[in-house]
Image (cartoon, rainbow, N blue to C red; front, side, top):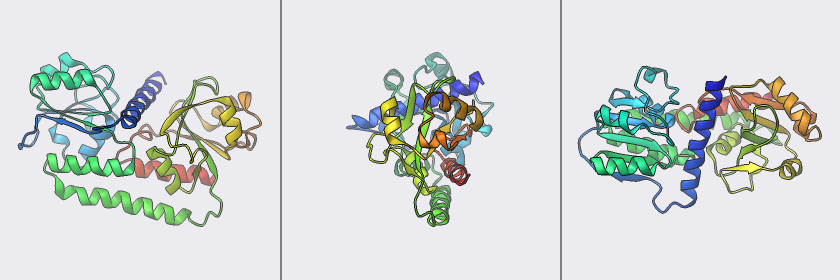
Amino acid sequence: MANHRAYFTALFLGILAIALSACSKSEPVKTTHGSASIPQRAVVIGPATAANLFALGAGQHVIAVSDYNTIEAAKELPRVGGLFDPNIERITALNPDLVLIQGQANSLQGYCEASGIEFRSFSTDTLAAWRTEMEWLAQRFDVQEQLPAQLQRMSDGLAALTASESSNATPPRVLLVISRRADEASSIMVAGHASFLNELLVHAGGQNVFTDNDRDYFDLNEESLIRAAPDVILEFSTDTTAQDALAVWRKAFPEVPAVRDGRIRVIAQEDALMPGPSMLETAQAIALELQE
């Protein structure tokens, strides 16, 4: 349980860092030390980027991943910390020719620049940004032949899901909870309109209760939650069940429609907060939960 909570917390913080970088972006994607040769020793700090590389068939070029990797094919690879605590000593020992990250890590970028190591950071938190990242990875690792199938799979899958849910005359109004205290409905962080989770929710036949909020992720206060009055509360967590989550919400917000009607749902996939190839499965899981 503790490991799962640590994973979700770290992954969320990484997503938040991407969101913050996007808010002030004059240069959202950075590259240093351009090279024509295909990288052979890539260190990837970002589970989504690692998943993208393996999906493209370029996993053999990855020599290390973050502590929060969920890719089965990379489970035996060395771990080199996370976005906020990269293990520079271990990275140096691995002698990489490319470092890829999700979000911002100024110390790591500075290290790569000083060491002559190619560095690339992605700010991927929309479906469009995911496609852009996939295109860059496919070109950089010379696996362009694998790209169309991956993009088509995502496009066709989401289109099919949208078509199957289009009969819903009134989409349920959903609160997307990506983080809260383990034992109570407080310190709640939710997804707004600008996040990929909002896009997936729409494809799955739901409507974000904060669809008019232009932010991607933000703290939710008690007054805003009560005023929003969601029909469904959808949590992303591996540490709770829908029944246990409902008990927690009933202690704090029994009058909220989703709580009153027992419509608390939980997405327990470890990679559900990851803007990578698994987004299609996440959208499908959301659709199933909304049908309950």
